[in-house]
Image 1 (cartoon, protein in one colour):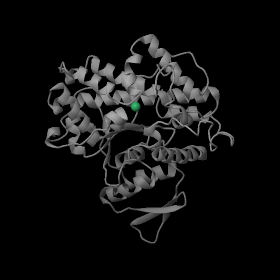
Image 2 (tube, protein in one colour):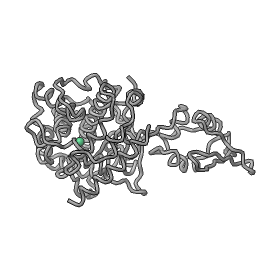
Image 3 (tube, protein in one colour):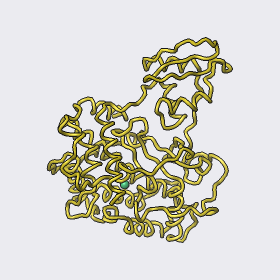
Image 4 (cartoon, helix red, strand yellow):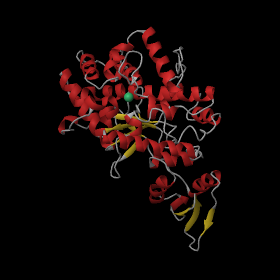
Length: 392
Ligand SMILES: [Zn+2]
């Protein structure tokens, strides 16, 4: 199974929501239980640098000079009020296919690393790569439930997942305060901390697991219930409970999303919000931007059905896309596509970063797009829910 092709093919079988569904107030409108990381994600400012990264399963090549986490005060991590999702968050494919992926926030992440390190009595740098992966496992659980959402939409033939995130996500259920998805995601993260770490992350400080469990238990409701997912049987029940909430009807089977492979999980884009120079401290690597020629860019434009329009100037060409005109230079040495054009055009085409845009151009990929106006409506409504939450 390839991603994001899986999401695309499942979505193709889901008819757009009818007028009496999306776009109208849900019966739960008076008290929605939204996922805060979806309706009100941490803001990425215009000055924040977003970098596509890889989190290798083995030791990464040293990517630059060492970075000392303890040389700075990173402030409050927000873990006690927002759990792991204050440190990293998941953007669902359903909401924005181009921005789909996991975003790690440098400042709160290093604040959290500092807290865990202090609690465990070890230097922050010694556990930062472990903490990054621990948070990754939490966020991958959100990916898994989006996959479950796609499966259910495919089977039941109607949109479900975004409504689940907006209305049903945090509803108390199964004797727990909710959100149950956070209970499972936090359990997953603790299990990572408990498990055998990859060789390059060893030795695990003996006090690390205790520190992780204490932090998880001090997180908000849902997150702090992680022990409720301790047994296989109970966990299967909780997965069935989440599936029921997504489908908005009773479901008793609990194996949902179990088929996901390590490779599937690796295909979820990971991004770093902060300075790339601190990446060596967490054992991650920056994905670099490939060189692209003007010819390759024009082939890519053609693939999207966009035709370059010759302008009066021989060293500059123009094109039109979704009613807007843009252009690019053609006199780069060896036919190279200018960096300054790439820097402008990645935003124009809706890519979250320039390297991802250039990688897509080289691979002649289609521009990822929200498939229907219904989704746009759903996103706008989420903003309204976020407003409502802020007023409470
Ligand atoms: Zn979470």
